[in-house]
Image (cartoon, rainbow, N blue to C red):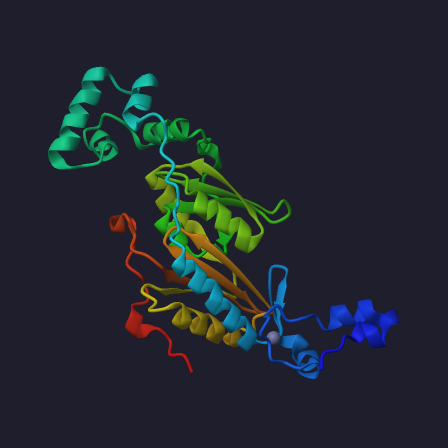
Length: 301
Ligand SMILES: [Zn+2]
């Protein structure tokens, strides 16, 4: 028989509710007594709270199943003007130079931008300025490069998006993220969802990207695990649950960035980002080789 604490103890109803929250899993089997014992080890996901890792795992399985069922359509944003036309309008190139570079690009199957740099017709900086104009975002001021940043964004996501944190203000809860080729909105959104920090984009050159990546350090107690080819939502949920146990997670956040689902599990002392690559990358060439081949994945008990 179900009864509510409120009916027996109306005066302390509010206090009891906050102490013994209701498990968000509708099929939760825990009794009220069990919940009160387990309440200390529950896991929060946004406004939801799960009384145990088991309930969290069941809910996570549903979450991943829904994700697998829904085809995630990321609307690729294409700038209105081509990079060549922007370069032309900025006076960085003449008509003849652009025509020649475009012919070279077609002939060798090489990106126009790479051709321009190879032929010495444009500098990385000019191309970055052109991209910024193309996308309507600022370019990083040359005087603002070179700050070491402690980052908790998974390196795999940064690499997949050719992005790097340039500046971080903990007080303002803001990140400045530099992009080389295009602004990846899924990265901006997922960073905000998972970290609560607002990420603001700007453009940088490939050289600046490499140099700044070298200056990044990882927030202590923060770790990334990547699974390139998860077999099923059940396997994904089981892995997430095992990591939740490992870090004694109190909180979990879920987001989606490009081809990855990103689950952050936060315990008191440790934090782990579990990434699953859920579809083949459209442009596999830009993807890096993963540090963790499937065989080396830690076994799940
Ligand atoms: Zn429960």
